[in-house]
Length: 335
Image (cartoon, rainbow, N blue to C red; front, side):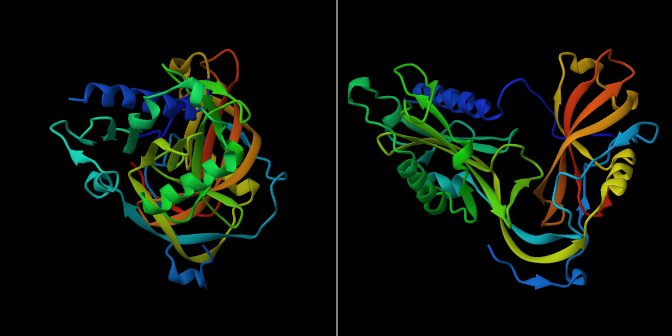
């Protein structure tokens, strides 16, 4: 059976969804009141199997991939990885919270701090309304960006127990905290910072195969307080690596035509008209390299992240989509 995972029909930044999630969590809390790895030989690490990646074949479509704008390499590193499972039982006490009668929900005795696990997104969402709910605009101080990053770093390492994560300063977002809800701001005017964390090694960003969001996003206010966070259920620690032959443009086109790809985003006003069986032409407009953790093989492998213009027989105008396909040869499980 063909499955496309994950797909996001988007018209705004994905991190905006995290803002909405934490605002919702604050509402819930209100109502609750009551790496440098050693090189190894290729034979020591099996070529990873990528489940749920198989898509409808595009053998009849014209596929054009241009890799000329990324560095030319003959091999990529494939890393072994160890998953780390985050649980409510482990995280709740660190935050001074206790289990409640509400499923997947922990809170403190004041009912002003709450941690909720969402089994659908497989993410934890935390809100501390002790610091985010009691707000006096007259006493708010200026946000210090580097200080906020330092506080978030300490929180991620000591409270979440996540290592190898780096704050993405260039991807930070800023807000002005008001009595009702945060409003968008700049680094100069904001008093609340959204700080995303990702895995990075050898100049590449590492993602999870099951979550398109950053593994951790922390909110820090100008009072140097962590007011909330959202985190993936699984972290991973990166270990030893091996060199694997890189796929070149012609091979990448062949892999996509064979269906060895996964769609991350589709930008269209008519998603109902999208059907892979109707693809006539796929032309890459930009290509970058990223790494993703494979939960099926406990490896981190490189992918080409491809923005493409796609023409379909079922739609009058081309659409834009983002897909990923392995940058090295892999074995694929059919579904």
